[in-house]
Image (cartoon, rainbow, N blue to C red; front, top):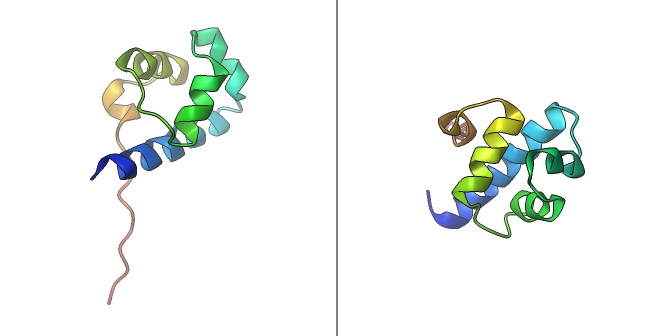
Length: 78
């Protein structure tokens, strides 16, 4: 997986986790993550710092490996 693909998949994953928990971007400020940082992550416009990833783990109550595990895209059968 190249960097743009990782950024896109992480962006989709973070957005899905946040919306599944009915959180707004602003709600993550309770975990010391600015809504601007979340916005940049969800638009795949930046690479996250490790500290931001750890804060997201705390916000979503998951481990770092869980946060960074994405479902593999399904491949079409021929």
